[in-house]
Amino acid sequence: MEMQVGGFLDRLENDFSLISKVRPIFAKPLSRNVRYRITDNFLNF
Image (cartoon, rainbow, N blue to C red; front, side, top):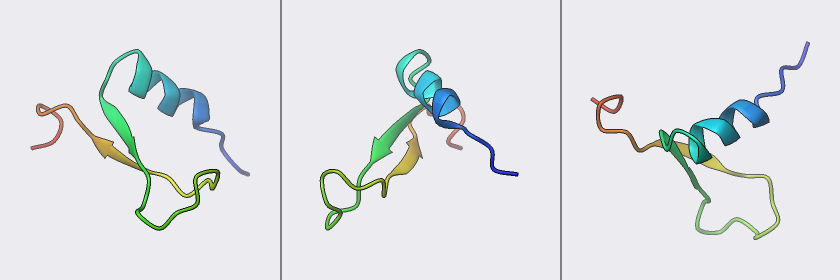
């Protein structure tokens, strides 16, 4: 069973500004290799 989390991550990034996308340095521009970083200081303790 595969869980789709794209909508949840999009909402956390755009609506709440809790996370941000970080693409690795050598990743191709259209690759799906994306990491997420917590940007909220309260959650990132």
